[in-house]
Length: 161
Image (cartoon, rainbow, N blue to C red; front, side, top):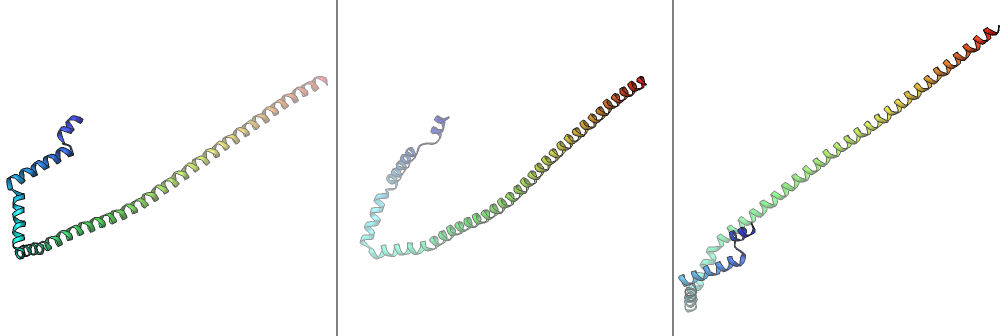
């Protein structure tokens, strides 16, 4: 994969070399250096005309510069407004989400405490019932043993008389 990626996208050095070669070809075909040298020579020979051309170009570029600066400023202010609005919405959403999660956590904690209290109450009730049942059975057993003992004693007394 890495080999195909490198073949698909040339390195920065290769791009820079291609750019320099293209620039050199344009310089050769259009004779840019020669043309620029002739313009400078003409400006040195006719300074008033050169100054007039420079002033005309500068004055003609003012509306372009104003428009570009207005566009950039508008884009920047729109971006800042978007960031502030989105930041406000994200903050409000975060606060609402935090509040909802807090109340859900409190509700779940309350349910857990209620379930725990119900469990301990039920466990205590079962223990009380088992204790009462054991006591009732012990009393009945003791009463039965006592009744049997009385009957034996009574039967012995009857036999003696």
